[in-house]
Length: 484
Ligand code: AMP
Ligand code: MG
Image 1 (cartoon, protein in one colour):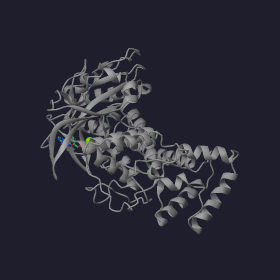
Image 2: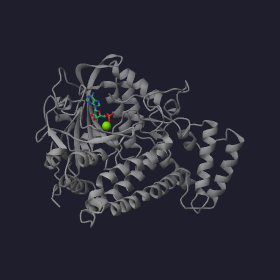
Image 3: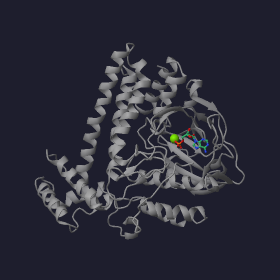
Image 4: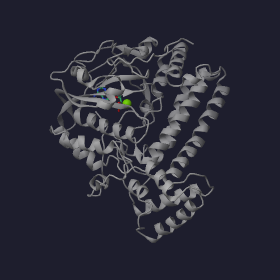
């Protein structure tokens, strides 16, 4: 197996320290191209804690890097090739409006992709302009940083910079912007589908080896690397989706090109958090059939993993029937892992330390009540001990209290566990929209205030009720749009 990634050595000196290991993959996976400079670069938002984590001293940063008007030292910009199943149909894609500058090695020795999104046309742009509007880039910044603070694996946002150029969208011209995205990597299920469609066997072998080295180094010596990768990725996705479900997060566009092998949440387009509990909740304006509804996310993740498995089949075993058998067994583990992770999360949300056979039924009866009562998902979990709004909930509380009494931990310990798993603050849809509207007309104050609240989502002692409440106008018909 080729050695793509010699171990990165920690180096405390702050500053850019880019490597370009992705460029060492076979040619089929990337196209060298620089970002297209913009007319009037202006840094709007900079994530200082993240800059620090990356070893970038915020004060000395050349801000024109964040629109691609200048390149950081060591950058070797490229667009990544990939394919994907979008709403069930296969298509070839690639970075149509993004450029990977390189991989920053942090002072601690970790490796993160630094990518500009909205950075101009590439060979994969098709009919697109390669650009992004300010609103969707600010939206990705808010939601991804909220997810990070909630403890959910995610790509992060380092900066949003205005381009000084308009982009033409459905409803007319909008201010343009570039987002600097930081990710464990941008390797997607769709990257493997691309290798299967456009590459040869050695390309796929290189991608498997690279992905294992980058995300699962403990499996580097696995007897069957492709199968080991499939199993490991399934496990990470099971854990990720369970966490989404635990906070009511709806990704909205779980196409295979938007599923990262690292197990991070990636590609924030029409995503949003559910208010009233309903598994059929969909916000995305183009998801008319509810393919990516809240309650479908686990089965869609498994469907996506089946596409990964298909791409890997020739490497899993030379005889196809045997390869299918092995891959199927690996995929079947997903459901069991997801169920276990989900139930563990739900136990924590109910303040339960130990396990009883009736726990799943206890959770489901709560969810059924929430569904019928159209109760707010986040606030119901955050306020389980509040006075019951009706008789059914009061009876549920009694059963739950009796269950709590059967564990050795004290009520105070149970409350502490609940508070660590039930956020008080999530990015409420109406608050996000208000912040974005202000941001697009030049006032970033509401966004900064919102980010500050969302940075400590489990701080139940903090009392800002207007950030806890669901949309006072009811939020009915809330629609989100794919982030172009
Ligand atoms: P997304 O829906 O953001 O996951 O993007 C799906 C595909 O469309 C990816 O290949 C993107 O690079 C491409 N794409 C999205 N917006 C644009 C744009 N404005 N210009 C060029 N390509 C785009
Ligand atoms: Mg995408």
